[in-house]
Image (tube, rainbow, N blue to C red; front, side, top):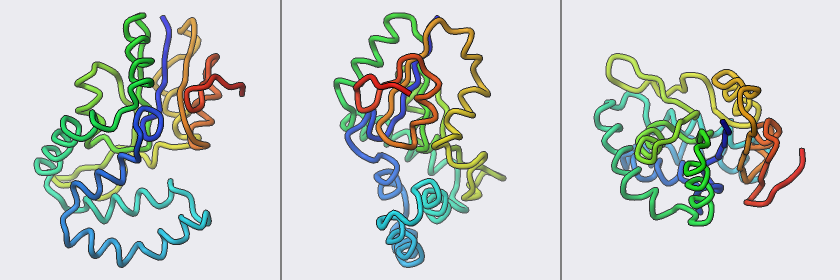
Length: 198
């Protein structure tokens, strides 16, 4: 058995699907208030002073705290069905499908949210490891269940769920430094579609 680990944003897609989902799903008042409260942090992010993994949970909190799970779930499914397919990289989707045809176990490992990744992964029959929004009494708390799934957390979560020595070969695909730890787990790491060494 072989294992293939895929990043999502920028690897399987042409665009940052996390930001697009925030704009797609957040209410106008949340977008307005979020832009006011988070704009200083966004400037620091653009200047490279704070990393994306620190900003994402704050943005997610503003967008989803207190929101009804049924409403957001419906938005996530709609986004997965209507928006994600239009943003996929055909060449990387072909690589993923080739792994599936070969009987490889395919896993999406992403800092993006389960709200839309879960229905998309279910639709193409692959497993998912990602940032997950916590729920209490039918509403989102605004917090992540287990932190932002990026950088070292990608590798940690993969190793928690899979015994890599059980696989004859491990492939990994990423596009930024946030994927380095995951790529280092694989015999066949690829950055931006090109095989690299770690």
